[in-house]
Length: 212
Image 1 (spheres, one colour):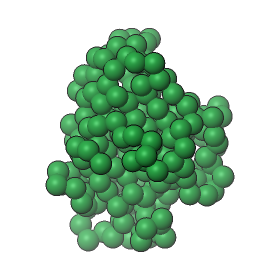
Image 2 (cartoon, one colour; image 1 turned 90 degrees about the vertical axis):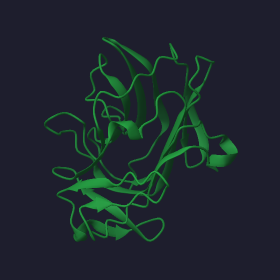
Image 3 (tube, helix red, strand yellow; image 1 turned 180 degrees about the vertical axis):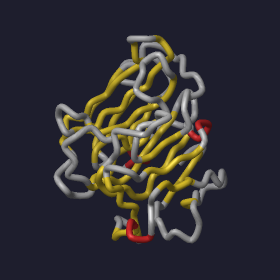
Image 4 (cartoon, helix red, strand yellow; image 1 turned 120 degrees about the vertical axis):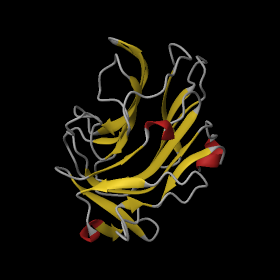
C-alpha cells in the first residue's frame, strides 16, 4: 500500500513502554499513562482504549510525510467533545502539520492540514457521517500532494465521504512530534475518549480500491 511510514496494531500489550510499529520503518510509539488495562478487544486482536483525560501516544514528527499521504485507523467512540486522534500541530494555523480530530460542533471527523500561514489552512475536510455511535468505523484520509480539485479526501467505512481542494502544494515538516489521543501542545489537552486500532501512515495517496 505504498511507502509505509508507520503501521501500528495498537495492541497495547505493555511488554515495553513502546507500541510496536510492524512496518520496516520501526517507528515505535511511546505510551503515556497507558496500562495493560487499556488493551481491549479490537477489530483484529487487541486495540488501545484511551480514557479522555491523561492517556496518549507519541512518535517523531518525521513519521508524518510531507506531500502526498494517507492516514488510516479504526475508531470506536461515543465522545461528544472535541478529541484529537492524530496530530502534529497544536491547532494554530501558523504551525505546520496534520490534525485529525472529532469535530466539537458536529460529532464528526475533521482533517486539517496547516501550511504555516496564520489564519489560513491548506485544506480542511469535515465528514458528512457522524462517527460517535459506539460502533467501529474505518477512517482514512488521503491527500495527493497537489492543488487538483478534490485532491484531499476523507473516507468513512471504505466509502468516499467528502473532499477538499488544497490551496497550495506547500507542506513543511510538522511543527510538533506526532501525538495520538491528545493535542500536540507542550501541555497536552483535547484528549480522545474511545478506542483506536490498526493505525497506519503512508507517503502515498491510497486509491479507493486500496482503501476498500
